[in-house]
Amino acid sequence: MLTDLNIKNFAIIDSLHVSFKPGLNILTGETGAGKSIIIDAVNLILGGRAFADVIRTGEEEATVEALFDLSGRPELLKKLAEMGVESSGELLVKRVISRAGKNRVFLNGTMSIITLLAERSREMINIYGQHESQTLLRPDNHLTLLDGYAGLLPRRAEFGAIFGDYRKTLDELKRLEELEREAVQRIDLLGFQSSELADAALQPGEEEALTQERQLLAHAEKLFQNSQGAFEALYEGDAAILGVLAGIRARVAEIAAIDGSLQLPLEGLSSAHAQLEDAALALRDYAARVEVDPLRLQAVEERLDLIQRLKRKYAPTIEEILALKEQIDRELEQLLNAERTRGELDAQLTELAARLQLKGKELSEKRLLAAKALKYAMEKELHGLNMKDAVFEAGFETLAEPRAAGLERVEFLFSPNPGEPPKPLSRIASGGELSRLMLALKQIHPESDVPTLIFDEVDSGIGGATSALVGKKLKKVANRQQVLCITHLPQVAAFADHHFKVEKRVEGGRTTTAVALLAGEARVAEMARMLGGEKITSNTLAHAREMIEEGRLTNS
Image 1: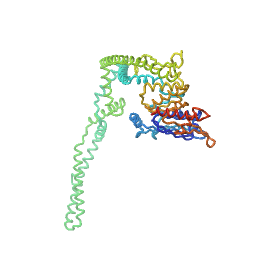
Image 2 (image 1 turned 135 degrees about the vertical axis):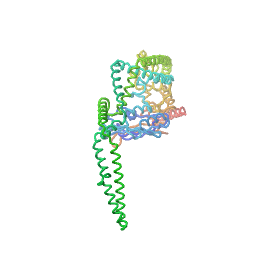
Image 3 (image 1 turned 90 degrees about the vertical axis):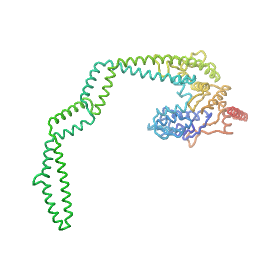
Image 4 (image 1 turned 45 degrees about the vertical axis):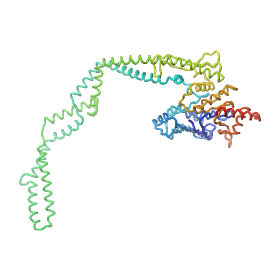
């Protein structure tokens, strides 16, 4: 539900705030007061196109903000969360129009894009009026409206699920057919690649290990000579360092026994002797492990060359080559088993096509019956809205190929005048006719998940008792959904739950639009103005009070 609307520097509006409430919100005012400007501003919230010429003269940007109460719409709150828009039950939509061309959209303070705004806002508001292109003006919506009226949306969803499986199977079959055309050469290529990689028997981490092994084998002679030489210099022979160090340590031990202050140097010599001895033994063991193996070195070099060739040919790393090998084997298996796979897909596609035709035919038959009922119900409502010669029907066009919604396309046809054949509603319905068509549809099919409906001059071209009937119908719709209605007829305004007056004022030499919620005598005065124009008499005021009272009794 739309709870608040803030408009700033938009057309002749300087700054305007309106709080709307549940039920029937009526907006009245003299021609040119700015009622249509408010609708234009709301249209921006629906994702409508914005132009710099809507910005108030002398200002650099215009702003429109709309606050929605979505506490009863968990599915919409979930969609907003998926878009990254967090909400505790309210949504603030903001459009900023700039002369510099930097138009921006915000959803609860988070910057968004116009396409997402349009997608979400259509689930919150529908506008029906002379310059709007909303639900009824989009033929793609007509089938959904018919299915909703007939209670066929679950059957349609069932058909759509089968259609999804059908399209998926058809796509798989087409892909297989494309593969089959190149199958022979492809099998030869994949078979060779698979064998080559299988013979190579690559292992993860193998290249790094071989590179390290090659490094050791290539320098094996030097590693042996230096480690063995170092061991001998430390440990063997009369001139071995450990032997010399042992002699020094014996001498210092002898004098340390005399002078205890030499105990620390003696401990250092003992520690050095032990460390050098450990190092010498480690070098001896290392030299014993060194292998001088030219044949192994050659084998390692050849293996590394093979890995490099395969990397250049297939992928930059062994891990990627192994992943490619799995992919090659899967495709090869699919190609080798293509005949069996193709047969399975053909059988599956035939079975799904039969189910589509069966379910689609059932859906089509029910739609045809629903279209007749819809025609009768709509024409009855339209005749009661001063469109006594109106003809309404649903035109069916059988599709060459099934779609997710069924086997046919549906477009509403309409003729407002006698003797004229029905034509596509989207091309011939005027704004007033469109409003009354939507009002009639809301009467016969009230179930709708759009919480706010805006009717712009639904009373166009009607008067007298018919206008009172329009007011009653609007009131019935407003018992289920929030309704905002712009009207020039007091017979319609009398049914308002909340009556707003839009008026144009001149302040400081500038024209601006203001909106006031009317109550008591202020509302009586506005109703009297609508009834009597410039000259308001006591009779006019009495008539206005009588109409308000009758509307109040109807509302209660």
